[in-house]
Image (cartoon, rainbow, N blue to C red; front, side):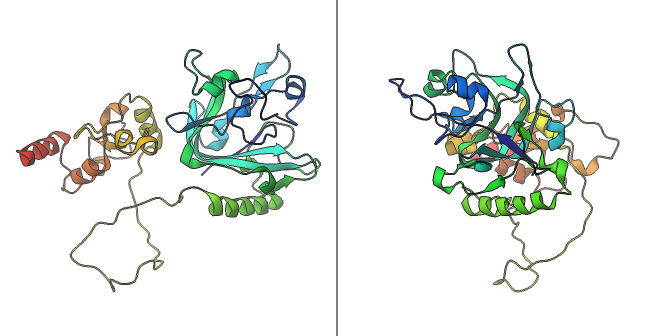
Length: 328
């Protein structure tokens, strides 16, 4: 996954400045002149989820004074196209300056969405009452609650740059792209250490789940699994951009065949999840075939698998008819 470092002010919990009685509970520190002057920071709610289990991460990108400009996050450095407005699947590492100097990792978002431009909350509908009380009006990054982790203060021991003179490490800028410094051995060593920490404390497994088809004939002994085997094959490549564009246009994440909704069944874990199925079998496509989001339909995992159990795959109408006949 692409990796992004975001430099923010130091706070204890990042779940808001003020209680309902407006008494300060978490003072941001070492976040620049604005934070020093006003005692406030938009990142104060970076680890506060809304009722859907979504967090909204802020990193300051404004350059200069009130006459300055809002800088873009260069998501093309993370693998996006230059015309994309956001990119999904980014690991965002949040860092802040410790009181003894040097920046330390305070937490991370796994599998986050990073926006090129600043996004704004609806002023009449903040994500939470705390966002409204703290007037947190914008964000740059989103993630799901189960994909975030914040270290408590006395466990923030991952020091990324004890010296300001070290090159190829986050400096004064709020955004840092490690991919621009692949030749920095010290940075590589730090990223290995960081990855080990993430593996130990991440809230869910990062391995992708691939269901195994049951077959009548099984090669080898049935009671041994996990053997490493090198396989080489050619596979027709699916366009990630096409699927992203298709899903971004959806207003309903229910299965177009059976109506199943992951969010209705699994709550926040299922929010925004659906699979994209090619109406035209991908095996029939060539390198010159052009497709659009209208060539895809939204399916739950069960219907998607059932379509592809037939060769050639069933059409959506055929499977829908099969379901209806079976219920009768």
